[in-house]
Image (cartoon, rainbow, N blue to C red):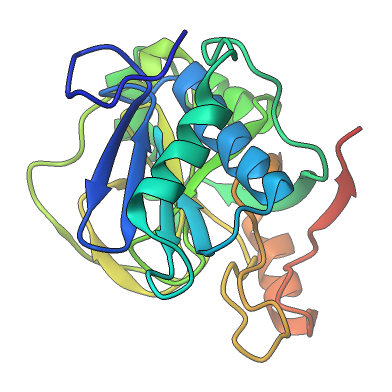
Length: 252
């Protein structure tokens, strides 16, 4: 797949954003392939060390590049990015190395996941199958946003393509797990939401007292394990790390 910068419907597409930004879009909607491409291209940019680039980030299906117009100019950055894009089949690229697999304990249902039954019914399954799927599916950090360090995780099996609520839940707690449109959100702050809360962790995705305040990185993966509400109570009262009993390993 070759790069297009002329506004056609082909992907990837490269567009300018203001005077110091470029957006490389790999699809017009979330898919596993588009997210893989966005993550892989960001890693490729980091390896290339292009003069003038200050920062990169990814969304669900795109990579954003911020550059310093004093050190470089738009045409130089555009040409360098197009060179990186050319010659790669972006529909089938490997994910970057150095990602981590996190094992995160979570209580599903009950008072810690009050909308699990409702969400499972919308997905056409029962609560036991819902919990089994939530604890056997490795979900990837597709992007981070809305609140500091907050990950959007996916993608879940197709029957989890359930809508957001029509109304708003007044508040879910820090560490809540919510579900909609084949994704999970692991909340990093107490907040209102239109997503259905199905579980809770003691995991803190935003730890401002740490050198790296965002616990997760884009491309990391999470595998949840089911614990009881009583076990979660114990973790909340004894854990001093903010990881809530979670551990990780580097993905080979």
